[in-house]
Amino acid sequence: MKHEDEDRLEDALGEFRRPPQLDREGLWQRIDGALQRRRRVRRAIVWTSAMAAALVLGVLVGRLGPDRIPPRPAPTAVSPYHAVLASTLGEAILVLEDFDPSTATPATSARARHTLANVRLLMELSKERDSSTAALLADLELVLAQAVYAMEAPSPGGGARVAQTVRQRGLAARLKGAAPRTGPGAMPMGI
Amino acid sequence: MSPSPPIDEEQLVARARRGDDAAFRALYDLHVDGVFGLAFRMVGDRHHAEDLTQETFVRAFSRIASFRGRAPFSIWLHAVARRTILNGLRRVWRQRRREVVFEAAGDRAVPGPERDADLQDRLAAAVDRLPPRARLTLLLYDVEGHTHDHIAQVLGVTIGTSKAQLARARRLLRARLRGALKRREP
Image 1: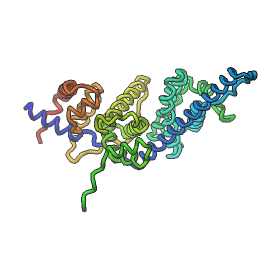
Image 2: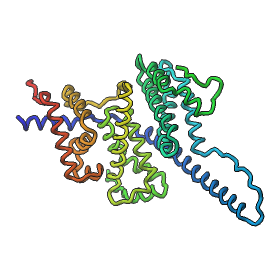
Image 3: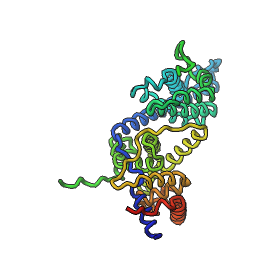
C-alpha cells in the first residue's frame, strides 16, 4: 500500500506544473534590452568617474603647482545614475497618471512592464547608494507590479488596489519630490 | 537528417565574456527552457516565471566575468536562478503580507494527458507550502531529474544536506497528501 502511495506521488510529481509554451524570442528581446540599458548605465558611470578623477587631479595639480590660480567652484554635474533614475521616475509618473485598467491596451501594459523592469534594475544599483531612494523604488516596484497585473488580468478591485497602495505609501508626494516635474498634470495619479 | 554538431559551451562562455552578443544568445537558447521550467514550477504563474527568467539571465550575463569555470556553466546559471527565484518568492511574500492578491493570470500549467486534476491541485498547494529550499530540492530532484551532486552545487550545500532536504520535502508532502494519494476505485 505504501509503495502504491509512493508510486502515485512519483507519477504526480512527474506531471507537476508542466511549463506553458514560452515566447522565447519575446523574452530574449526583453533580456537584450535590459542588458543594453545596463551596459549604457555602466559605461556612463565609468566615463563620469574618469571625468571626476581627471577633474580632481586637475584641481590638485592646480593647487600644488607653482602658479597657484584661485580655484573655481567645480560645476555640479548630474551623474548618469541620477539621470537614469530621474527618467525612470518620470516614466513611472506617466504610467501611473495614465493608469486605467478598463482602457488598458497591450501597449500601455508593455510600457508599465518596461518601467517595472527599469525600477528593478535601479533597485539593485540604489541599494548601496541611497536608502531613501531604495525604499521609494521598492514601493514603486510594488505599485507597478499591481498595475501590470491589473492591466493584464483585469478584476473589479485591481484599480482600487493600486490607488490604495499609492495612498498608503504616500507615493504621489514622494515621487513628486524625487522626480523632475513632467508637466502641469503631474500627480496626483489619473487613477 | 544528420545530427547537429555538439555545441561547445566552454567556447560560447569564452566568447560571451569577450562581449560576443551571438554567444549570449546561444547560451540563452541552450538554457532558457530549464530556467523558465524551474521558475514556473516554483511560482506557478507564467508572467512571474518569465520575469524571474529575465532577471536570471540579465544577472548572469552581466556578471559572466565572475564565472571561473570551475563547475559547468549550467550549474553556475542554476545557482543564479536559485538566488533570483528565492528572492522573487520573498518579494511575493512581502507583497502578500501587504494584502496584495495576485490575480490568476490565466496562463496556468498545461495539463498532461493523464493529469489527475484533484491530485495535481492538492500537490501544487502542498508543494507551495514547502520551505523554499526543500521545495527547490524536490523540484530539481524529483521533477527535473538532477543528481544530488548537481543540486548540492546549485544550492551551495553538501550532498548530505541535499539528501536531507529531499527526505524532508517528501515527508512533508506525504503527510499533507495523505488520503489524496489513495487510488480511487474506477
